[in-house]
Length: 480
Ligand SMILES: Cc1cc2nc3c(=O)[nH]c(=O)nc-3n(C[C@H](O)[C@H](O)[C@H](O)COP(=O)(O)OP(=O)(O)OC[C@H]3O[C@@H](n4cnc5c(N)ncnc54)[C@H](O)[C@@H]3O)c2cc1C
Image (cartoon, rainbow, N blue to C red; front, side, top):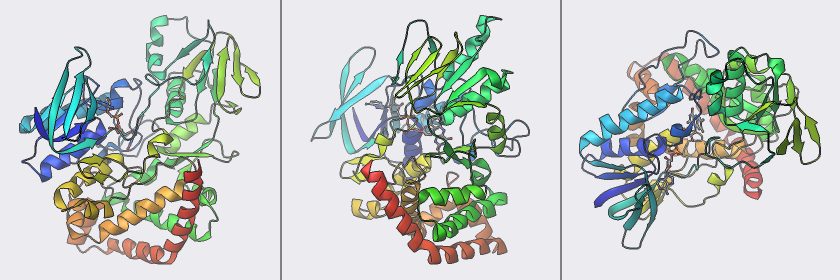
């Protein structure tokens, strides 16, 4: 077998890269290799009630919108752009592979196959998982590593706590099957973890009619969560999106550190938190609606003792103490780290000779970043030019380190804004929050573009503050 680009990983990131690559360079040949049996990566292993937390309008691949990009009319996301369910995301990625990429005749796909390595002659070794058969693939141009994010989900991760006999711990994916127990339902539920999966689980339990008093929630850290109202793409939301960027710049002018910056933005409603009396120590770029926060606030039994080290019948064990919970409680493991911080511990560039390592260029827009990397690959002559436009952004996870991610994103955005070819591509890119809207308003010579003059004024004044906070945050991030 021979191919131009061997892409390891047919998840969202690999597919987004391939979609733009084949559109920009229709003559190239691509081969995907992936351990999963179907495209979509971790979405194959997700819990049944998982959904995108960002609007599907800016997720997926550039060439294909999701089928339901309407405004939600009911539920806690009411009034905001629809979020695709996990099943919709999987169906979407199957369509991308089966109806868009494979029919070009220029894409091969090896599912249920592991990539084992590539030698100095660019011969890659892959192994079919079920038969064990090894094959070699000659990579004519580049190996594309689309596994950087090391996505971890509850159904596949390794638990970091002990579980005694007789204790029932399930991943959230098992909850929708509880109906099979008829009236023999758990009397109490304990959610373990403070991230978005735990939040989804809390909302789901309450939506099923479970009394919030029958739920305990182990939240080692409180989190800032991006108010979904400010992640809405489209012309009607331009002032909100750019307004938030201006607010970040202005807050940077006053804040002494990342925690203070996020606190100021939280006061203005750009970020939300479930418990306003606790200082957030976590920020993973998850988004949430005010409606979901209101539901989650109904869970009052919150246990803040750090991480669970063991679970025994009727008892949660922590490093320093133990907390009793009702006997026979069902424990729901939401402790998988969706994108482990170790994923950010790679100082390789995106473009490095015969390999491309897909990393965030606009944190946290991972699919947009992958599509842009493909655009840079085709339209620029050498790796120096490409890497100058593709500084890898760090995957920060706390308020105090967030300014580092924001700084790198702003530096990349600044570099892109100077490049006409990239600007033309943004204008047609559905994955970019503002590109198509800006192009349309520019064609109409709309007075609404004045918001960008305001942004530029704030950027000129406060970029030194963004650099100050960003470098301070980098020192904290690098030391961890
Ligand atoms: C529940 C959940 C919700 C999320 N929601 C959003 C959201 O709304 N918006 C957003 O931007 N991000 C979201 N994310 C972040 C998420 O990481 C990305 O959206 C995206 O799906 C990650 O795609 P990926 O391709 O990087 O990783 P994956 O989906 O993990 O795909 C990587 C693939 O590589 C394969 N692979 C790895 N190693 C090998 C090997 N050696 N050989 C062969 N194959 C290999 C794996 O089998 C896997 O299929 C969410 C994450 C989670 C867990």
